Image 1: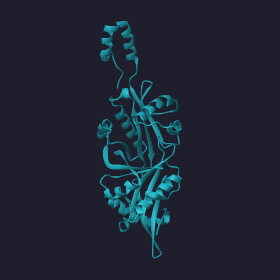
Image 2: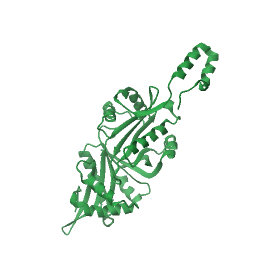
Image 3: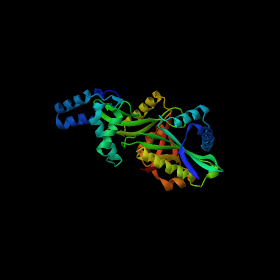
Image 4: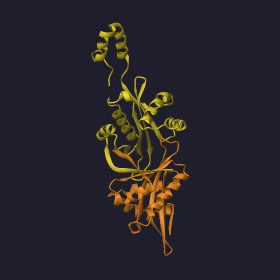
Length: 150
Length: 183
């Protein structure tokens, strides 16, 4: 049984364990201060960053098996906000069971309730596993991204 | 870009003089010389609406889009509102608006700093290849730095080779592809 709900302050330790694995996937290691700040933004009602956890109940123990973070921002092409899905991660143990899809669909509902006009995200072009799912639930655009680190 | 001086009067005026008579051409030449061609970049303000609107339409034409008037009105409102995270910049030559750029600053999860998303950039067709897009982007780098952003990023069509020739000089192409689901 899978439940998806907004992340709350007391979810931190389980979230942090998954967040670390997510960073390892991207071969990144962020300083603790950044993770703390990210968690603060996720759980702050006044921040445009929102986080959701996917929970599996096993033997009456709730375990977080995935998370998703989004940021809502205004855009110039629409008079409603866009929902940028920044992070999505599913525990290796439960891959291929529809948790990623369920998280994305949850975000579609969330964005709809927030009157957003779209949900979008980026992924590395060689992440074929993720793209197999993304191709089913969204459209790949022909945009590429440029970045300048300041 | 400095004011043109006499030595730099384009050949077309001297050539025209042969055809049209020097008096007429001298008049045109003086007008040309008097024009202040220094390029300035500054934030868009409410009084810029008409000129902005012309470029915004040109930009939409480029993307074969025609946004409803209420969206354009809302966009202009966001650009000029003090409490909106959307900012607009214009490049001016004299009193003519020749380019526009729109950005939004937003928080993200990988740093404590906000990041700067360059949403729109458009240079008027007859002002291209004069370094204006580059100047706009560099101006935005400066603006984003002052706002303590950690990065500036933008998207472009993979086949927009003209734009990419410039972007490749100013930024790094990431290996991300974008997915989108319209609601």
